[in-house]
Length: 260
Image (cartoon, rainbow, N blue to C red; front, side, top):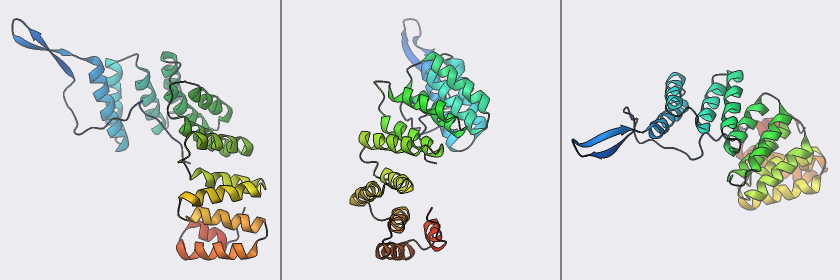
Protein backbone atom coordinates (compact mmCIF):
# COMPACT_ATOMS: atom_id res chain seq x y z
CA UNK A 1 0.00 0.00 0.00
CA UNK A 2 1.23 3.44 -0.92
CA UNK A 3 1.11 5.53 2.26
CA UNK A 4 2.95 8.78 2.79
CA UNK A 5 4.81 9.30 6.06
CA UNK A 6 6.29 12.66 6.95
CA UNK A 7 9.14 12.25 9.36
CA UNK A 8 10.09 15.91 9.68
CA UNK A 9 8.60 19.21 8.62
CA UNK A 10 11.56 19.53 6.26
CA UNK A 11 13.76 16.75 4.85
CA UNK A 12 17.24 16.56 6.28
CA UNK A 13 20.32 15.43 4.41
CA UNK A 14 23.67 14.52 5.96
CA UNK A 15 26.92 14.82 4.09
CA UNK A 16 28.72 12.97 6.89
CA UNK A 17 27.96 11.58 10.33
CA UNK A 18 28.81 14.07 13.03
CA UNK A 19 30.23 12.69 16.26
CA UNK A 20 30.46 15.90 18.27
CA UNK A 21 27.49 17.83 19.57
CA UNK A 22 26.51 21.24 18.20
CA UNK A 23 28.15 24.28 19.73
CA UNK A 24 27.99 27.99 19.14
CA UNK A 25 31.03 30.22 19.31
CA UNK A 26 30.91 33.34 21.45
CA UNK A 27 33.45 36.01 22.24
CA UNK A 28 35.10 35.90 25.61
CA UNK A 29 37.05 38.92 26.75
CA UNK A 30 39.39 36.76 28.81
CA UNK A 31 40.20 33.76 26.65
CA UNK A 32 39.19 35.11 23.24
CA UNK A 33 36.65 32.38 22.36
CA UNK A 34 34.42 29.97 24.21
CA UNK A 35 31.87 27.42 23.11
CA UNK A 36 28.38 27.07 24.47
CA UNK A 37 26.21 23.98 24.08
CA UNK A 38 23.25 24.42 21.72
CA UNK A 39 20.53 21.90 22.69
CA UNK A 40 18.31 22.56 19.66
CA UNK A 41 21.18 22.19 17.22
CA UNK A 42 22.35 19.05 19.00
CA UNK A 43 18.83 17.58 18.89
CA UNK A 44 18.54 18.35 15.17
CA UNK A 45 21.82 16.57 14.52
CA UNK A 46 20.69 13.54 16.50
CA UNK A 47 17.40 13.38 14.58
CA UNK A 48 19.23 13.57 11.25
CA UNK A 49 21.44 10.70 12.33
CA UNK A 50 18.42 8.71 13.53
CA UNK A 51 16.78 9.09 10.12
CA UNK A 52 19.93 7.87 8.41
CA UNK A 53 19.99 4.81 10.67
CA UNK A 54 16.28 4.17 10.12
CA UNK A 55 16.85 4.15 6.36
CA UNK A 56 19.64 1.63 6.92
CA UNK A 57 17.46 -0.46 9.27
CA UNK A 58 19.95 0.07 12.09
CA UNK A 59 17.30 0.33 14.76
CA UNK A 60 19.63 0.35 17.76
CA UNK A 61 21.56 3.38 16.55
CA UNK A 62 18.34 5.09 15.51
CA UNK A 63 16.90 4.74 19.00
CA UNK A 64 20.11 5.85 20.70
CA UNK A 65 20.09 9.05 18.68
CA UNK A 66 16.40 9.68 19.27
CA UNK A 67 16.91 9.16 23.01
CA UNK A 68 19.63 11.81 22.91
CA UNK A 69 17.46 14.16 20.86
CA UNK A 70 14.69 13.95 23.44
CA UNK A 71 17.20 14.48 26.23
CA UNK A 72 18.20 17.75 24.56
CA UNK A 73 14.67 18.83 23.52
CA UNK A 74 12.13 17.04 25.75
CA UNK A 75 9.18 19.13 24.50
CA UNK A 76 9.76 18.88 20.76
CA UNK A 77 6.68 17.50 18.99
CA UNK A 78 8.61 16.57 15.85
CA UNK A 79 11.02 14.35 17.79
CA UNK A 80 8.10 12.51 19.36
CA UNK A 81 6.64 12.00 15.88
CA UNK A 82 9.90 10.48 14.64
CA UNK A 83 10.09 8.32 17.74
CA UNK A 84 6.52 7.13 17.12
CA UNK A 85 7.56 6.12 13.61
CA UNK A 86 10.54 4.26 15.07
CA UNK A 87 8.24 2.30 17.37
CA UNK A 88 6.01 1.47 14.40
CA UNK A 89 9.02 0.07 12.60
CA UNK A 90 9.85 -2.22 15.52
CA UNK A 91 6.19 -3.28 15.90
CA UNK A 92 5.64 -1.74 19.32
CA UNK A 93 2.27 -0.28 18.42
CA UNK A 94 1.13 0.68 21.92
CA UNK A 95 4.25 2.75 22.47
CA UNK A 96 4.01 4.24 18.99
CA UNK A 97 0.48 5.43 19.70
CA UNK A 98 1.56 6.86 23.04
CA UNK A 99 4.26 8.89 21.29
CA UNK A 100 1.90 10.12 18.56
CA UNK A 101 -0.55 11.30 21.18
CA UNK A 102 2.19 12.95 23.18
CA UNK A 103 3.38 14.77 20.06
CA UNK A 104 -0.13 16.09 19.50
CA UNK A 105 -0.45 17.17 23.13
CA UNK A 106 2.64 19.29 22.64
CA UNK A 107 1.48 20.67 19.28
CA UNK A 108 -2.20 20.09 18.55
CA UNK A 109 -1.93 21.80 15.15
CA UNK A 110 0.89 19.67 13.78
CA UNK A 111 -0.50 18.42 10.45
CA UNK A 112 2.47 16.14 9.79
CA UNK A 113 1.78 14.26 13.01
CA UNK A 114 -1.92 13.91 12.21
CA UNK A 115 -1.01 12.52 8.79
CA UNK A 116 1.40 9.95 10.20
CA UNK A 117 -0.94 9.04 13.01
CA UNK A 118 -3.64 8.44 10.40
CA UNK A 119 -1.45 6.04 8.44
CA UNK A 120 -0.62 4.25 11.68
CA UNK A 121 -4.28 3.86 12.62
CA UNK A 122 -5.17 2.67 9.13
CA UNK A 123 -2.58 -0.11 9.33
CA UNK A 124 -4.32 -1.19 12.55
CA UNK A 125 -7.68 -1.21 10.68
CA UNK A 126 -8.99 1.59 12.86
CA UNK A 127 -10.45 3.25 9.81
CA UNK A 128 -12.78 5.87 11.31
CA UNK A 129 -10.07 7.13 13.66
CA UNK A 130 -7.62 7.21 10.75
CA UNK A 131 -10.03 9.29 8.68
CA UNK A 132 -10.45 11.75 11.55
CA UNK A 133 -6.67 12.12 11.80
CA UNK A 134 -6.29 12.72 8.05
CA UNK A 135 -9.03 15.34 8.09
CA UNK A 136 -7.41 17.05 11.06
CA UNK A 137 -4.21 17.27 9.01
CA UNK A 138 -5.80 18.91 5.97
CA UNK A 139 -7.70 21.36 8.17
CA UNK A 140 -4.43 23.03 9.22
CA UNK A 141 -4.14 26.21 7.15
CA UNK A 142 -0.34 26.09 6.83
CA UNK A 143 -0.19 22.48 5.67
CA UNK A 144 1.41 21.97 2.25
CA UNK A 145 1.13 18.18 1.80
CA UNK A 146 -2.65 18.19 1.48
CA UNK A 147 -2.68 16.06 -1.69
CA UNK A 148 -0.63 13.31 -0.04
CA UNK A 149 -2.92 13.22 2.96
CA UNK A 150 -6.07 13.06 0.83
CA UNK A 151 -4.45 10.20 -1.06
CA UNK A 152 -3.70 8.48 2.25
CA UNK A 153 -7.35 8.93 3.22
CA UNK A 154 -8.42 7.41 -0.10
CA UNK A 155 -6.10 4.43 0.27
CA UNK A 156 -7.41 3.85 3.77
CA UNK A 157 -11.03 4.10 2.62
CA UNK A 158 -10.26 1.63 -0.16
CA UNK A 159 -8.75 -0.75 2.39
CA UNK A 160 -11.95 -0.38 4.42
CA UNK A 161 -13.96 -1.18 1.25
CA UNK A 162 -15.63 2.23 1.41
CA UNK A 163 -15.59 2.71 -2.37
CA UNK A 164 -17.51 5.98 -2.64
CA UNK A 165 -15.43 7.57 0.09
CA UNK A 166 -12.20 6.38 -1.58
CA UNK A 167 -13.28 7.93 -4.89
CA UNK A 168 -14.13 11.18 -3.12
CA UNK A 169 -10.72 11.45 -1.46
CA UNK A 170 -8.82 10.42 -4.60
CA UNK A 171 -10.58 13.21 -6.48
CA UNK A 172 -9.59 15.70 -3.79
CA UNK A 173 -5.99 14.50 -3.97
CA UNK A 174 -6.01 15.11 -7.73
CA UNK A 175 -7.56 18.54 -7.36
CA UNK A 176 -4.75 19.54 -4.99
CA UNK A 177 -2.05 18.00 -7.19
CA UNK A 178 -3.07 17.27 -10.81
CA UNK A 179 0.40 15.82 -11.44
CA UNK A 180 -0.56 12.71 -9.46
CA UNK A 181 -1.85 11.20 -12.71
CA UNK A 182 -1.38 7.62 -11.47
CA UNK A 183 -4.39 8.21 -9.23
CA UNK A 184 -6.55 7.95 -12.34
CA UNK A 185 -5.76 4.23 -12.38
CA UNK A 186 -7.03 3.82 -8.84
CA UNK A 187 -10.16 5.73 -9.77
CA UNK A 188 -10.64 3.63 -12.90
CA UNK A 189 -10.44 0.42 -10.88
CA UNK A 190 -12.98 1.65 -8.34
CA UNK A 191 -15.33 3.00 -10.98
CA UNK A 192 -15.24 -0.31 -12.85
CA UNK A 193 -15.98 -2.10 -9.58
CA UNK A 194 -19.07 0.05 -9.06
CA UNK A 195 -20.08 -0.18 -12.75
CA UNK A 196 -19.50 3.53 -13.41
CA UNK A 197 -18.04 2.73 -16.79
CA UNK A 198 -18.13 6.18 -18.36
CA UNK A 199 -16.21 7.59 -15.43
CA UNK A 200 -13.71 4.74 -15.61
CA UNK A 201 -13.15 5.36 -19.33
CA UNK A 202 -12.52 9.05 -18.64
CA UNK A 203 -10.04 8.12 -15.89
CA UNK A 204 -8.10 5.91 -18.28
CA UNK A 205 -8.05 8.53 -21.03
CA UNK A 206 -6.80 11.11 -18.52
CA UNK A 207 -4.04 8.75 -17.43
CA UNK A 208 -2.83 8.00 -20.95
CA UNK A 209 -2.72 11.70 -21.87
CA UNK A 210 0.32 12.07 -19.62
CA UNK A 211 1.75 8.57 -19.31
CA UNK A 212 2.87 5.61 -21.35
CA UNK A 213 0.91 2.40 -21.04
CA UNK A 214 1.68 0.31 -17.97
CA UNK A 215 0.65 -3.19 -17.00
CA UNK A 216 -1.90 -1.66 -14.64
CA UNK A 217 -3.39 0.76 -17.18
CA UNK A 218 -3.71 -1.99 -19.81
CA UNK A 219 -5.28 -4.25 -17.21
CA UNK A 220 -7.91 -1.68 -16.34
CA UNK A 221 -8.67 -1.23 -20.06
CA UNK A 222 -9.11 -5.01 -20.27
CA UNK A 223 -11.42 -5.04 -17.26
CA UNK A 224 -13.47 -2.19 -18.69
CA UNK A 225 -13.69 -3.89 -22.10
CA UNK A 226 -14.79 -7.13 -20.47
CA UNK A 227 -17.41 -5.38 -18.33
CA UNK A 228 -18.84 -3.51 -21.33
CA UNK A 229 -18.63 -6.53 -23.65
CA UNK A 230 -16.17 -4.89 -26.06
CA UNK A 231 -14.48 -7.97 -27.43
CA UNK A 232 -12.28 -6.22 -29.99
CA UNK A 233 -11.06 -3.74 -27.41
CA UNK A 234 -10.34 -6.50 -24.94
CA UNK A 235 -8.26 -8.40 -27.50
CA UNK A 236 -6.35 -5.26 -28.41
CA UNK A 237 -5.34 -4.40 -24.86
CA UNK A 238 -4.70 -8.02 -23.94
CA UNK A 239 -2.27 -8.33 -26.85
CA UNK A 240 -0.43 -5.20 -25.68
CA UNK A 241 -0.27 -6.48 -22.12
CA UNK A 242 1.14 -9.86 -23.12
CA UNK A 243 3.63 -8.31 -25.51
CA UNK A 244 4.91 -5.47 -23.32
CA UNK A 245 4.56 -6.96 -19.83
CA UNK A 246 4.56 -10.75 -20.24
CA UNK A 247 6.06 -11.41 -16.79
CA UNK A 248 3.75 -9.09 -14.89
CA UNK A 249 1.14 -10.11 -12.35
CA UNK A 250 -1.47 -8.45 -14.55
CA UNK A 251 -0.56 -10.69 -17.48
CA UNK A 252 -1.08 -13.67 -15.18
CA UNK A 253 -4.41 -12.21 -14.02
CA UNK A 254 -5.52 -11.95 -17.65
CA UNK A 255 -4.46 -15.50 -18.49
CA UNK A 256 -6.41 -16.72 -15.45
CA UNK A 257 -9.42 -14.55 -16.39
CA UNK A 258 -9.38 -12.90 -12.96
CA UNK A 259 -11.13 -9.72 -14.00
CA UNK A 260 -12.68 -9.12 -10.59
